[in-house]
Figure (cartoon, rainbow, N blue to C red):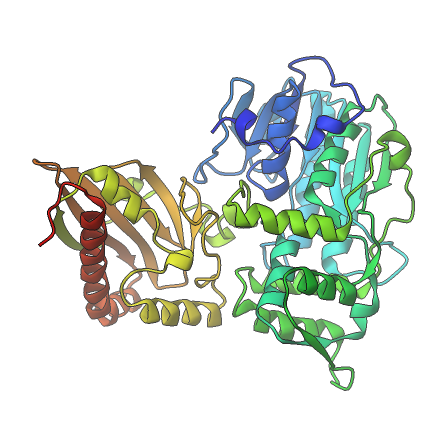
Length: 514
C-alpha cells in the first residue's frame, strides 16, 4: 500500500521546513495506531522512514522506496543495536498497555532504558516521545504514571528528548475514541463517579501528528516537555454528553457515590461490564477509566509559539472521525496489533503438528472466482456470518466472559479486507485475491484455529470453493472441545457455502434463472 495515497494530508498547513531530503527517521511501534498515521506524513515530506516492528507475524502494509521495515524487540539490546544504525531522529511510540496490569509498567521501563542506552551509543540526534498528560504531584493511575516515567528514563540520556504529552486522542480507531463511542452507543444509563467532574483536554489525531512532525522539524537540540491539547477543556461528563449529542444518542447518568468500594475497584467492575460490548480488552478499559482520577489538561501552551496552528475543537474532531467511519476511510485501527498472547504465533503453513484436526467441505459454484471471492471477503462485522449467526454471537459472548475479544471488533472496512485486518474474533493471516482467504482465530479456546477459503477455477466460468477448518488441539481439553463443536461446525460451514453459491449465482449474469 503506497503511503503517498493513504496519508491524510495532516501536515500540509505546517509552517516548519522539512529537514534535508532522505533524512533517516526511525518510527518504533510502527504497527501502532499513531505510527500508522505518522509514517505516511513523514514519507510525504521526503524522509526515509525505518519502521520498527517487534515480530514478523504481523504484516506491514505500507510499501514505498523510502520505507524500510525492520524487526526488533526493545527488551533485546542486540536487536536494537542493528536497528538504530545510521538513524538521525527516532520516534519512541511503544507502550505495553496490553500486558497484564502487574507487568506493563515494569516492561515499559525496561524497554525505555534499553532504547535510551542503545540510541546514545548509536549517536541519535533527537528522540521524540509521545506520553500522557498528568502531574506527578497528584495521585495518577498506573497508566499515566508509566507514561511519565518512560519520558523521564529517556531524558536521562545525553540525547535531546522532546516529550509531547497528550490526553484523550480523538480519531477513528484510537483506543480512547473506541471506548468513548462504545460507552455512548451501548449504554442508556451510565454510572456517575466523582471522577467524571475532572477535566480533560481531548486532542484530534490530526493535531497530534502535526505536533509530532512539526517538533521534529523545529531546529532545536534542547530537551523539553510540551503539553499538547485540543481547543476545548471539558469535564469528562461533558465529553460523554457531547459525543452523545453528536451521535444523537439519549443517555443519562446515575450516581454511584454511595457504593462502598475504592475507585480502582469500581473502575475494574465497570471495565468488565463495558468489556461485554466493546472490543477493547478489560485491562485497557480499566487503565483508561482509572486515568479519570486526575485532570489531564495543558498547563502550558509553549508549543503554540513554535507551531502556531489552531487545534480542532472536540466537536469538530468527533464529527470528522464519525464521517471517516461513514465513508469507510479508516486506515489504522488500534486492533491492527494482535493480542499479546497471539503476537508470536506462527502462520498456519509453518506448523508441522501431527495433531492437526481438519474439517473440509466443498461446493461447485456457477460463477467465476472473482465474483465468489467478493462475496467471501464481505463476511463478518455488520454483514454477519451468513449461517447460524445466533451461534456465532453465543460463541463471541462466551469469549467475552472469558476475557477474550468476542465479536465486538467487527471490521475496519465494511467491504474491503487486507492482510492483518481484525475480523470479529479472527485475523486475516493470508489474502490472495480470487484464490485464498485464511483467517486465524484470536478467541480463547483450548487450541489454535484457522478458517480457510480456497478457490479453484473450473471450466465454463465456474469455481470450486473449499472451506477448511484447521485446529491444533491442546491435549484432552482441545479434543473434547472439537468433538462438542463438530456438529455446529458442519451445520455452519455447509450453510455458509450454500449462501456463497446463492449470492455468486445471483451476481453472475451468465446464469439463467428458472
